[in-house]
Length: 104
Image 1 (tube, one colour):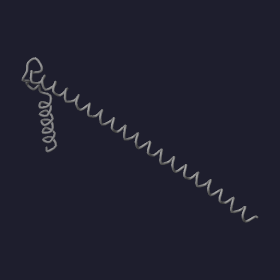
Image 2: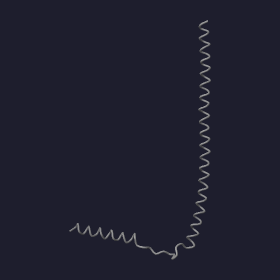
Image 3: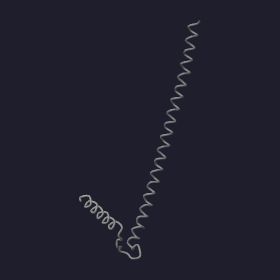
Image 4: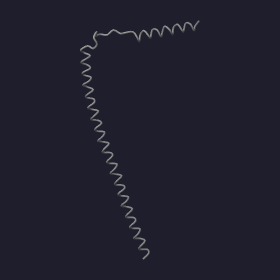
């Protein structure tokens, strides 16, 4: 008996939800948008344009930062490579001079 009662309550719940979600709601304007809705959409469009400009500025700034970072990394790696080659040449020259002094 409890199963039949629970099944009936579930059916009533589903029917109530169906009626709530799929029933047409009355609108305030008969022909679509009101003048206030149109003004709000225009204002929204203007604000979205301003936000797009800010994002463009932000992305340009990020591109500049990425360029600065990349060039800094290239300069540091280039300096380290140049320093290493210079040190190796000097060490090789000193080693050759030392060996020549020992032999003669």
